[in-house]
Image (cartoon, rainbow, N blue to C red; front, side):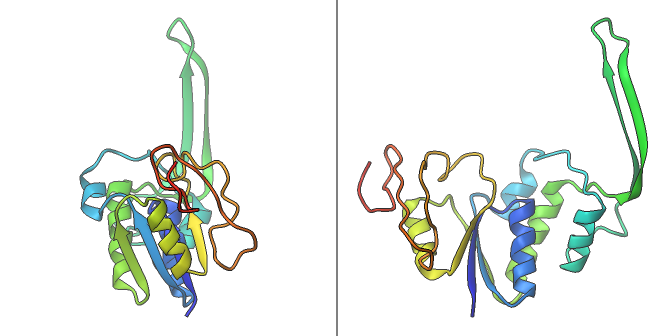
Length: 184
């Protein structure tokens, strides 16, 4: 069976993982936080999902809040000038309804769904270089979700994270073991 590892369990990483499971892949997602930690944590974003993203959620069976969440039918923005008056303001109707679900609800549910579906596995820990090496050996493809910090923040040159790709991947991080196996 085709195996994919995804490092990062945010909106895009989990949606990709669940879509790949539906297409017959085995998927391992590595998250530095458990579902419980996400649910009890701080607000991650003030996201509003528009029609294209909602269509993807529906297609992958992830639209758990369609009936409970009120539709967002328009958007507006106002900005103040230096004296406290309005510098500008605009408002517009959306072509199709959007939806806003707090990620502290959405992501834990998707994490649970990942583990419930055949072929899905959630690993909860901050991935270090050794973890990434093991994932690269065990999976045909690795995907790194947009990670603002953590294992990718100090890697300058990642040529390949798949054993199937040509070339090699080398990096160094102060105080961490590099993928080449030497201490930096």
